[in-house]
Each structure stands twice: as structure tokens, then as C-alpha cells.
Amino acid sequence: MIKEELLSKNGTATMKLSRELLSYSIGDRIPTITEFSSQISLARGTIQNAMRNLINSGAVAIESKGHMGSYLLRKNNTLLLEFAGITYLVGAMPLPYSKRYEGLASGIIISSENKNNTPLNLAYMRGAKNRMSMVDYGRYDFAIVSRFAAEKYIREKGTLEITISFGRESYTGKHVLMFHDSRKDSIVNGMKVGIDEDSYDQIELTRIVCKDRKVEYVPIEYSRTIECVQNGDIDATVMNVDEVTDKKVPIHYVDIKGYDYNNTEAVIVSSLEHKEIGSLLREQIDIETVLSVQKLILEDKIIPRY
Image (tube, rainbow, N blue to C red; front, side, top):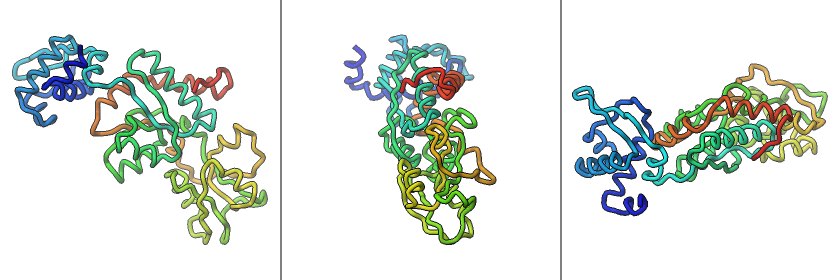
């Protein structure tokens, strides 16, 4: 029935208005018909018909308070989502090569399932910049990256926002400086240093540890980092310590001085243009549940689901 309505001449207005209303919470003051008309770029009469359709179907209940405006009294997310044409959400996150990432993925999916709302799926992709670009292009609804990477991308592009923050060490334990030669504990002139050009965090940390040193930067894929260090293809690189500790890899590494723990915090970013997605994510993902599941997986008390 709803699919048929969306194919009618007022279908586009109903879909767009539903997406707008998904971004509001019960009790919020909502825009006037004129304001909605301006935001959605459709005629006032068309918006009025779409609003009437949503009210009559039970998707929303609106309370008018005269000169104070209109307020969202009730909303039925299931109906709004159907009118909005949103059947599921898809997010991009790093390849789950560490227990911490496995825990984060499992926690997000389990939390979403507990809400029993919009189905949520995760895809895996290398490079924070790549993941956030895919959100900008509309390929994914959200991306999971470090706070450091999110803030850098937002400063550069201004198209995304941080929707959910999971706190310190929810993304990685920390990054360390790894060496091929176990006698080394700092970067020196002439070294070949591995750099992952898809990683904001790794690039920035590499520049910090190599400051004022004459080194050769060698492009590497993050998944081959440890192999490259062990084989001597590179002398040193910055690496997530979880890769070493999870697999008990016998490799020499030292802590990075003045470490910025924004690199260790996982955040979810979504599009500023589609605020309804951010609202849905905040409703579906419970931070406490995610962190609880992640902790249990880190402690080997449950098996990762994803």
C-alpha cells in the first residue's frame, strides 16, 4: 500500500517529508509548512498534502500551539521509515583484523538488533579517508573511523558530522613505533619508513616521529606492515599495537612520545545532508551495549559474531 502511494504524484513529497521528520524527537518543535517547503524545495500545497497523508496513516501526530508553533507529539518510526523508503542502513568500518575491531562490529550489530528497528549491516574497507568519502558519495550511510581522522576530514570537507562517540581505546589500544632492528628505539636519518597513504592517523603519526629526520617514505599496505618490518623491506613504521599483542608477534616496538589518544577513540560519522540517518543511528546504537560486548570479546569471554 505504502509503496503504491510513493509512486503517486505526492510520493516524492511524502518521502522527503518523512526523512525530515525522522530527524526530530518527540516533543521537538517542527518547521512550519512554509519552512518545510523551502527546505524540501516543493510547493506548500504539496507539502500540506504529504503531511496530511503522514498524519492520517498514523506515522506522526502533530500538536499545534498557536503562535508557539507545532510540535511532534508522536511518531511511528516503522511507518516513517517505510514512507521514507529506508529499508536498512549500511556502514563501512575497518577490516576486523583485531579483537577490538571484532568487538566493535559485534557490539554495533547486537545493539541494533536489540532495538529491533531498521536492519543494520557493516561492510569492511581499508582507509578512513576512503570510508568517509563513500559516505559523501552516498554509497554508505555511515562510517566508523577514529576521532582524529573524523575531525581532520570534517575540517577539510565540512560535509559529515560525528554522530556517535565510543570513548578512549574503543578504536585501537594505541599506535607504536616498530623497528626491524631490535637495537633501535627512535627514527634516525637514512631509514626507510613505511607509510600507509590511506590512513590519516598513520600518516600524521609518521610525520611526528620522523620530524626533522631525513628518511625515505615507502608506501605500504597496512595489512603487510608487520611482514615488511620483519623482512627488512622497511626499517620502521607506525602500527596499531593490537596487531602485535593479539597475534603475539615477536617484533620490537616502542611507545610514541606525546601520543594523542584521539587516535584510539572510535566514532561514527554520517552525512550532514541526511540528518535522518544520524537520528536513526543514535536511536538504534546504545554505546553502553557496544562497549560491553567489545570488552567481553577482548577478554575472550564471548566469540565475535561479525
